[in-house]
Image (cartoon, rainbow, N blue to C red; front, side, top):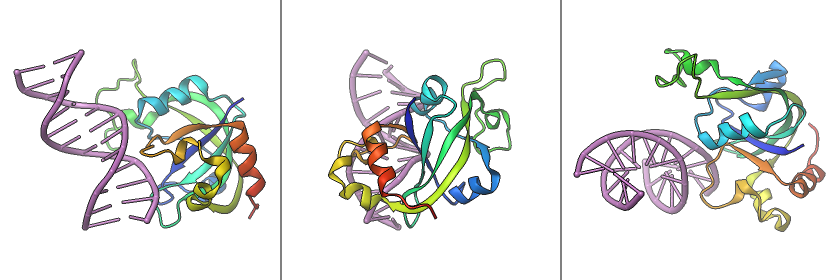
Length: 152
DNA sequence: GCCAACGTTGGC
DNA sequence: GCCAACGTTGGC
């Protein structure tokens, strides 16, 4: 069992959208490293921090869990979709995605608060230059952060 | 295989 | 809008 953090721009898909949908496929990942995490390492039941990025208040906005193992991302075959990949054929899909299910929305834990915690100094998302949209979270980091959160 | 140019990410 | 950092592309 591994803990994860997944980034999403709330203008694209927010924790409120997931709360409404209850479950959703994590479409649109086009990074090999992030894809490999989904394909090889994410297991049904794994818990995930839902992180809001590229927005006025970046930070951890909620918790979800992996509800379905990786399967081909259908947006890669759709010419009209912005995630369309002409190199990808249904026989040889390049991109996969897991599905996640809503667990809870929390009072946002701002990025600045994460940075301020010495316990999280090694956290992947806080490292200089990190751009990966899906990262594993160490058990100790998960435990520390879940002590901070307030369900809202 | 190297590496410069380019595009993207994401915080500020 | 700016800029640092990174991944990808493509010429050689």
